[in-house]
Image (cartoon, rainbow, N blue to C red; front, top):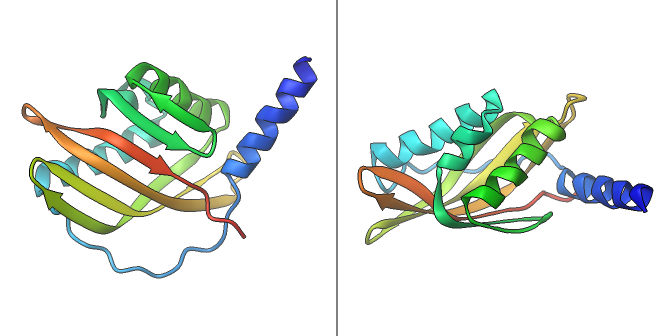
Length: 151
C-alpha cells in the first residue's frame, strides 16, 4: 500500500513538473500599485528561502489554491502544500513574470508565467492566475491557480 502511495505521489509530482520553454510575453505593471508589486516579490523571496510560514502568510485565511495536485482551502492547507512542493520536492529558483494585471474595485487579477528548478537543476515552468485583495494595510492572495506547461 505504501509503494502505491509513493508511486501515485511521484506521478503527481512529475505531472506537476512537466515543462517546456517559456514563450515571450510582455510584462504589464501591477494594476494595484506598489503594495501589490511588493507582495508578489515578497512571496517569491519567501519561496526561495523555503520559508513556508512566510509563504502561507501571503494567503488570506480562507484562500483557495488550485494546482495539478488538487484544491487546497485555507491558509493551513495551502501551507502544507507549499511545504510539499518547495521543501519536500525541492523546487527552487522560483520566479514569476506577470503578463496581465487588472484592477477591479479592491481586487487585482494577475496572470502570467512561473518558472523554477527541481532539486536536480531541471527547469520547469507553467502559468498562473491570482486574485489579490487588500486586507487592511496588507495585500493577500485570495485565490491562485497554477498549472504546468506540457511539452
